[in-house]
Image (tube, rainbow, N blue to C red):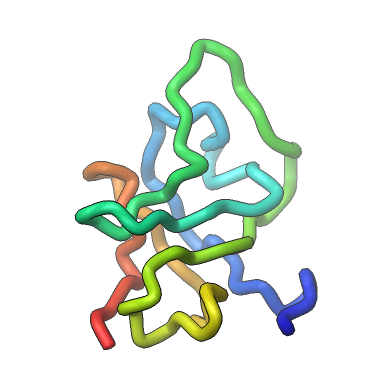
Length: 95
């Protein structure tokens, strides 16, 4: 089991239209989903800003069991990057 201290940080998020992005992701934790892309499922586009100022987001769960960084639906990469195009996890790597 991974503790919150060991969860990988979201080192970079360039999805500026996400309500959790204010010069980086400000959600407490994100979920990377299991769609056709390794997409950030925490992405939300609303006129209000969310999250916690000065917080570095973490990967709380990853549904991409086919990623080499995934073990028991938890990310074990040292950190991840989320990209503008479709809010994809750019650290995703097929096993």
